[in-house]
Length: 117
Image 1 (spheres, rainbow, N blue to C red):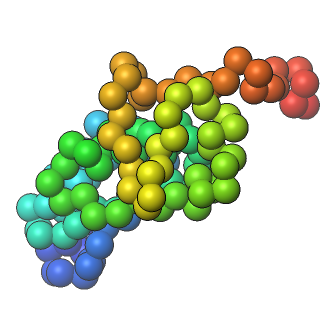
Image 2: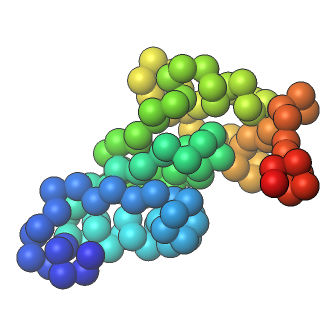
Image 3: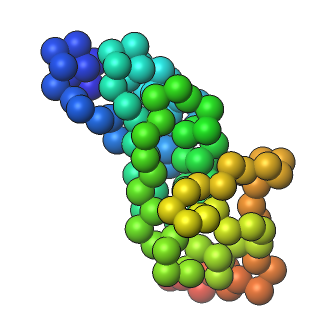
């Protein structure tokens, strides 16, 4: 990635907060891209917690440009979490509650290790 940024090989850097080391690492990636004038987009296909983590990153860096929200538009994310919808007319609502700003719904079925095998 460093070399691609150095030679101008990226128009947009796409990062997945969940797959790339969490919020701290995503912010480091965003800062590195920003030094090279490259905007950051987040890949948000991993679920609602991942999308909310990405929203925290995007609202805290200068070079944020977009967030992928594939499943969020179909109501699935809102059926999993308690709290406000993250999307509002194509925009991400900035998280305001503590932590990620969400929690799993009490009625959301969670599989135990024994049930999933």
